Image (cartoon, rainbow, N blue to C red):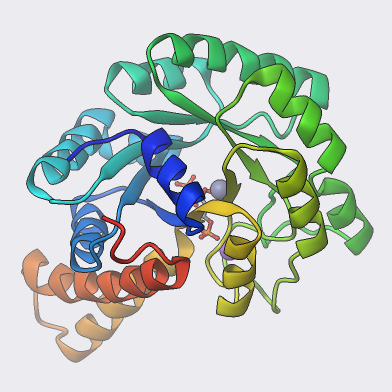
Length: 283
Ligand code: G3H
Ligand code: 13P
Ligand code: ZN
Ligand code: NA
């Protein structure tokens, strides 16, 4: 069934596990996510970025996810990832997204609070929950120094103020992860996470989780992370499988033959994540 992100995260918080929020932009990825979650009997969040909606069309994305939610015997929610445009956010709400992210992290604190509050007001009026970002979760390609990295991390006291003033439902925090594949091993600031967790009583979200070692993920979940975003690991599984298949079968031209194995490889990755996050059997 189609449920709200809020319900999913409330249960996760109570049960001390995290739920995967997997990025999608086509049918095979939707199917891989949903089939993996069904096989693990786990709740799951499908999320689309503004770029994904531009690529696939908001009509296709919402129709596919709702169709999946009708068939599948597990809680499924649809979320806008890294919304930066107010118009896009309103459009997603109109199309039935149960949760949206307003990413004001590139702005100074006051401005981030102002735009987040505005989204909370309109989304709250129709029962849609809002995720915001405090601190900067960059990309692994961003050329930043160690001291800059520190400065970009979420300040616990600012988090208290941000949550109080905006009334946001969940918060993405910067504790050392980055979007995309890592060059070395990412070092997460668990003390910072513990501090924020102890001061703020809404679900916390970990972005850039592809490539983070399993042990770090477990520690993050133990310390209050309830939603974990995964994109790159799925994309890489997809690309690996397509390349391998076409190398072995250079004459094949049937999309079903080419994409079928890719879907299976994505499913494997997603099932492993779901087990790692602790949401298996919670569907
Ligand atoms: O955090 C960003 C997600 O990985 C989506 O990336 O904007 O390329 O769709 P995208
Ligand atoms: P990764 O691509 O590193 O998994 O990050 C995904 C993400 O944070 C989407 O918002
Ligand atoms: Zn992200
Ligand atoms: Na990453």
